[in-house]
Structures are given as C-alpha cells and as structure tokens.
Image 1 (spheres, rainbow over the protein chains, first blue to last red):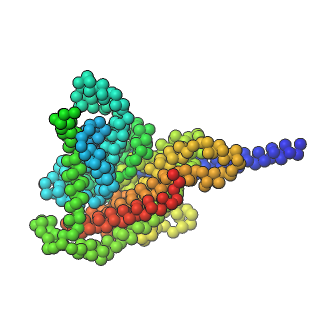
Image 2 (tube, each protein chain N blue to C red; image 1 turned 30 degrees about the horizontal axis):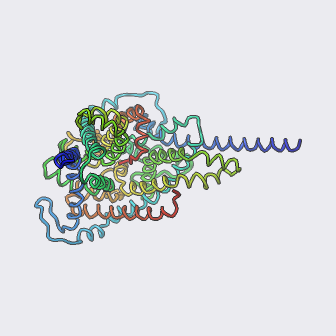
Image 3 (spheres, chains in turn yellow, green; image 1 turned 120 degrees about the vertical axis):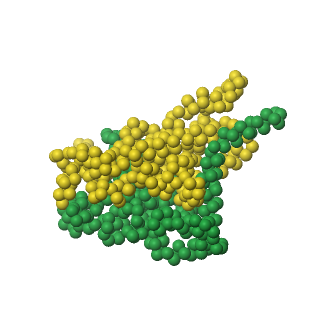
Length: 291
Length: 301
C-alpha cells in the first residue's frame, strides 16, 4: 500500500514538474513571438494614425480608433515611392532572370559535360564563395564609374548577377539525375541543350524555384551597391528610397507617412514568404546567409 | 575516341561556362586582384588616375585615422556582444520549439519573418520605437518610465544607449537564420539516443548537455563562424538606425568606413577604402581560421 501511494505522489510531482516546464517553454516562445511581431504591429499602427494625432501623442497610444489611409496617399504622391517600387521590380526581375540562366548553364557544364580542367575550375569557383563582397566593391565601383554606367540599370544589375553558391546547389541537384537518362537521350540524338531544357530543368524545378526566390529576396533588400552607384532619384531602389525619405522625406518629419512607405516596401516580401514558406526556409537552411 | 570529337565536347563545356566566367572574372576575380593593387598605390587620384608610388602609406593612414579606430571599436563591441548572445538565445528558443507540438509551425513561421524584411525599412521602425524627440519619449522609454527608470534617447543620446539599440536590432535581424539552423539540427538528432537515456533515467539537463549539445555542436560552431563574419560586416542595419552620416553619430563600422572612403561627402579615396577592406578581410579570415582550429578540439563529429 505504502509503496503505491509513494509512487503516486512521485508521479504527480513529476507531472506537475512537466506541466511547469511546458508552461515555461510556451512563455519563452510567446515572449520572442511578441518581440518579433511588435515592430510589425507598430509600423502598421503608426501608418494608420493621422499626422496630427501622431504628433499630439506625447505618450504613444497602443492602438488607434480612427485609422486613416491618408499616409498611404502621401507616401505615393509626396515622394516617388511608386518609382522606387518600379525600379526595384525591374532590377529584381532582370538580375534574377540573368542569374538563373547563367547559373543553370554553368551547373549543367559542371554536372554533365566532360572537359579538361573542369574540376579545377569548379574548385576555383567554390573558393570564390569565401570572398566577401566588401573586398570587390571598391574596384567594381571604379569600373562602373569609368564605364559611365552610374545611374543606369546595367550598372546596377551586372555586378549583382552572380551567386556562386547557387551553381553549387544546382550542380548537386543535377548530379542526382541518373546517368542512364542522359545516355538514352544521347542515343536518341538529343542535343545537350535540348536535354537540359527538356529533362534536367523540369526535374530540378524545386531547386530552381528555391534559388529564384532567395535571389528575389536578396535583390529586393539590396542597399549597398545601389547606394554607391545611384545618386539620381530616378534610379533609386526601395532601400535607398526609404533612406532618402528618412533624410529629406516629406519636407517635414512625417513619421506616419514614413511608416506607410515602410509597410508598402515590406509587404511584397512578406506575401512572397507566406506563399513559399517551406521552400524559402528549406533553401535558407541549405546554406543561405543573409547578405 | 578520336581527338576531334573530344575537342568539340571540351569546347562545348567551356561554352556553357562562359557566361558565368565572364561575370565572375569581371566582377570578382579582377576586382579581387585590383583591390590589393589599389591598397598599395600611394596618393592615388581617381580623376587623373595617377599615383606617387608604391608602399604601405594607405594602411598607415587609416590605422591612424580616429574615425577608423572608432569604427574598429564599434565593430568589435558589436561582434563580442551579439554573437554569443544571439547564439545562446537562439539555442534556448530552438530547444523550446523542439519540445512542443502545438503551435510549433506557427511559431516557426513567425520567427522567420525578420529574415524576409528589408533591413533598412524595419530599422526605421526600431528607430521610432527607441527615439526620444521633443514631441514624444517613444515607446521604449514609455516602458522604462513605467518601471521607474529614466528615459534616454537611444538614437541620438549616449554611446552605450546607441550601442544597445544597435545590438538589439542586430540580434533581432540574425535570429531567424540561427533558429532555423538549430531547429533543423535538433530535429535530426537520432531519437534512439533519447530513448536509451530515458530508460536509464537520465535527467533532462544531463540529456541536454551530454547528448543534445554534442550532437548539434557542429551546427553551433557553424553559426558562431557565420555570426562572426556577418557581424564584422555590419553596415546596413547601422545606417537604418543612425542615418548615412555614421562618423558624425560616432557609430561607424569597418564596412561603413570603406564605403565612406569610396563615396559620399568624405569619399573619393579608393586606396584608403581598399586598405580598410583588406584589413577587414584579414580580421575575418584570422577569426575563421582560429575558430576552425579550436573547433577541431571541441566539436563532436
């Protein structure tokens, strides 16, 4: 009898301890979730407050009962936010498309074609992954300036195209496609290019999609290179645009309108993320590093 | 195999590689060589493209420049504070995430959000949260005064306050990557080890330090190295908080110094920029090597 009672209290105590740990775990997770979400809440909230309301709040209000969309109108009319978005879209599409073509061709050469010096070149490519962008930006800046490509899309796009890591990722993927398929295609007289387009690209579509999305995120957020190479507002990307808005902005310190611009700039990527959540997280865990 | 056929196949391989090699050659290999050349050319003038001589003057100039020394100090502080803190917090959160079932997916998605946001844009939100102006104390100061503290301007105020926001924002930005890597590392630990330990009646803490931590140690080291490299290259989050004139704010970083030397009001000195970039590269390289050497002793493979 005594033994069973003892066992029961022990079990109860263990259960209580487990419940305690569980509550603590959820507590910590919740705190971090709030820390992550709060800035997003704050930017949306501030963007919905009118200029007058915001500036009369010495103690900022945690919610608003009279939301207004006037800041969003200001963000598009008082500063060329639409222009910044369009520039970024052009830059992102061109850079990503060029990157995908170049990377696919290179990965195919490394994975399927045989030629002297292939492995040596591949090692050379891999070693370039260790070179930080900061080291090459000085010369690229001088090069682009000397080619008179400042304030042009070519100047923005060309140095941003390459990502060696994606060649590596795609090559690994291509190599998993069985050799027998390639040999069969060769017997049928299919050309290499046709084989690449008709067989390898469709099979490797998931990896290609991941690469594309990661590059889109990188392009959408790029700041340093565009800042160096553009000083004409007509070629600003969103990151530079937001910095411009912050420093010279709406003629006065209009924080609600600034936050409206921030919401507009952040929204596309958040939508993209929610749509391709698994793919993005998968791709990043395979080796993406915030650039 | 006849020689002709081999030749055409070889040529084709190079043809497929050509675009990648043109881009890499033009914008990575050539600049890589050139940056060293620049860094040794003394008194280089970008308009006339002339220089006086070859030597170490550029290095000695920036090593005596108070702005550069301030940038080095800021960068080192940022690295030393944020890398251990962010890795530690990420470890706690990942272990927590790994131990729950309900809402796990939701939490994971939420935690990843900062990764896909524009650093410059969200930095502005942090700025208004922490800033104290004539019109408002700001949200963070509201909380500080609730707890009976003294309000302080984190954006234009004392050095420690500015450093605090910068570290806070940096940690916020790097966290998604770390949590993602650690949760997938934790999920891939062989469950048999845990079962065996539970049968033996091993305590949870002991399981964590003796099984979990050694099993994920390669990933922790990977995060520490990438964390070091990332924090040494801090720039755009600093600009987001303090604006483009970082020297005036006293918050410049090494990368910021490179760009300031290159372009803008204080720009036009590619030689100084090159020398600073190379010093940065050497620091990062040294730390990576030291890390790799020490990881050989501690990491369980």
